[in-house]
Image (tube, rainbow, N blue to C red; front, side, top):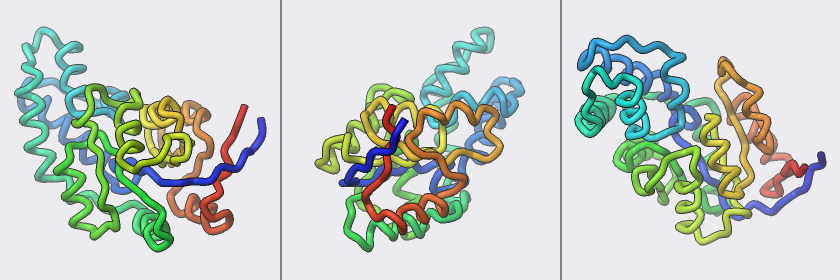
Length: 229
């Protein structure tokens, strides 16, 4: 194993759980709506596999897991998005989120958000926090959600750079898998209480927060050390 520096042409950021502390909000809304509509009790371990995936993937998963409940996927999807749409801007920015985005913006390095969330959710978060991001890609714009690389491949196309020269920041295992599958270098910033931290070993680097990741940028600029095996 060795460290091979690459020149970073553009930066790609997930949103939920990375830039904003929205994963607890998503899990709370998912659990509450399943209880309200179907009297089904869900716990954190039931919801964790959907972290980083699309809302539709969650709804399809619930319909498959609880066939006896007669879940209409699109009705559940609509109700879930309505409720979450009212809550998404209550999620606070995570430590280092604003600083790292401004680091790229000030150096005129292209950056984008590539999130599984609907586009209007991303737009609401960017507007509320005045984030210096103009280019957005939503998982609802592609046919399949993370861990498939489609959303990252589309974001690279929009940035106008080969995926191999983009670096993506992710907090979920599904997102890390998607980034690697898109041939991007992946920086993982997982939840400190993630039940399976070893699953992030496929990332090129792993940091406890965006602040530590920013320290690395301040030391190396946009020459990023990427692990090769």
